Image (cartoon, rainbow, N blue to C red; front, side, top):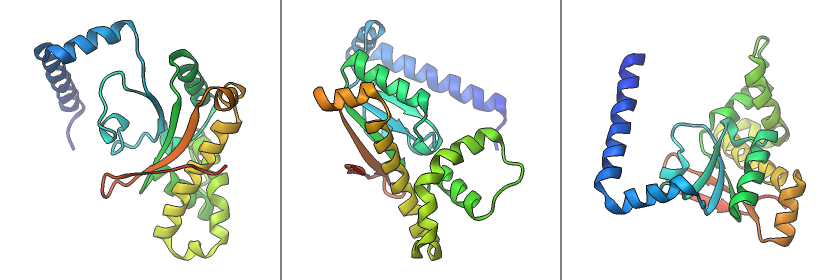
Length: 204
């Protein structure tokens, strides 16, 4: 395990390298200058905070291309809805992707909590579990409860579907944009094992 000071130095080094590349590449530097004044992201991504799933890298996009909101379990709460409303209304972005991923820790924590409740769980962590719970609790009543890997996989997909439904139906602004301005909200799952993203429409 590296120390905090070493970690800080790595971040500083990485940022210096990034700045150096900006200054040495005329086309990228030009793009950076334009982004100081405005941004025009072509997609909004609500993804998980998991360090293995950075949307910009996963989708091979650059500065200004994606409006990314990351939260453990890619859950939908008022702040996430507000962020998506802002981007869709302000920038005219017409695609929202809810990006879940395999081996999701928030999903596994929720399943563990449902099976073996924790007495002194942090209220902040509990708030995440509470939002994931409705989408996965029913799965524990099926035969999937006997196959942990299959249970987690199904729970990841169910949680993405739930978030898609919430975004489609939980905001008057987004509902209007869907109905009248071509906004689409779709689900997707990133496989940490292969790097591949599978897109799916999500529950209607």
